[in-house]
Length: 136
Image (cartoon, rainbow, N blue to C red):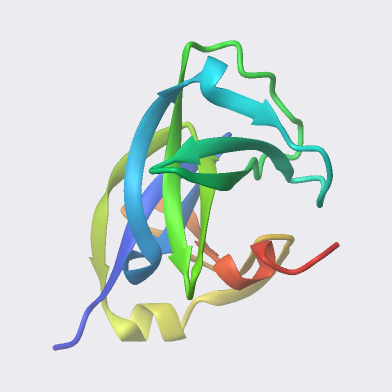
């Protein structure tokens, strides 16, 4: 049986599933290492330096929280030749999900997800990493 691998994370009050093959690394950095983004879509809030590259940081929470906490958890995504980070509140685990469950996921209207499903008793949004790279 073929399983799809996803990283389950919590962003705000919602759970998201990020395709496992897109996850490059999970890092925790000091909030002082973040630089305000000079331009871009509203969810592109900061930039940070990772392995000598400037990486855009996306904050998917609708109510932009300030980075009061000392540490920020970031999931670094690799999409083709690009890297970008997504600020998350918590990393739960890698999940192996049956393709039938993914195929049966409900279509939803969400700016960063097209489908949602129930996994481990929680509603999880399937993060659409492509939408993050489109211009607003």
